[in-house]
Amino acid sequence: ISALEVLRYEPPGLELTVACSKGTYIRALARDLGRQSGSCAYVSRLTRTRVGAFSLEEAVAPQEFECGRHLLPPARFLPRLSGVGRLELDPDRRAELLNGKPPDDGWFRPCAPQEGCYAVFDAAERLLAVVRRSAGRFEYRAVFPEAGF
Image 1: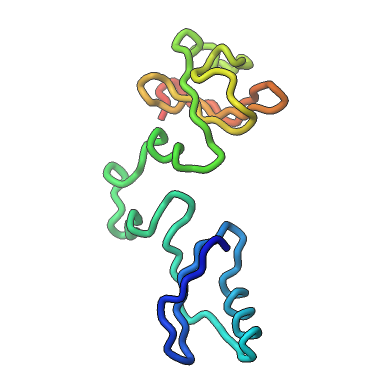
Image 2: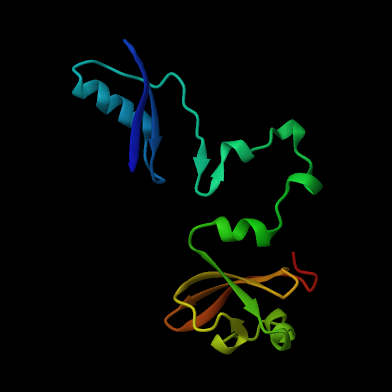
């Protein structure tokens, strides 16, 4: 838990806002707060306002969702995911990448990335592949069709 703020306290009700990492059980937090206060506690309402870099304000109700209007292209949503870097493919290496030839550092800009997962784009911002760098080598996680995404 990185932040906990009391928004309202009108006994027996307590309203909190909590900033936490994945895997945090808010209902267990309520139980533990109840135990520490010599009482019992439960969650009567829970609203997730953020997941990573995505906020509730950006959400669209299912009945209002329009694919052409609301679906973000990979170039816009992938940079918001923690743990996914971005690489741009050298245009001269496109055919090799799409045919599954093992890539090396010279194929990408920026070059020599750290270990981890990367989305590979072309200059037109089309997603071509997802690669993982481990032990100084790249391996494919996915390669997308010629059209890209």
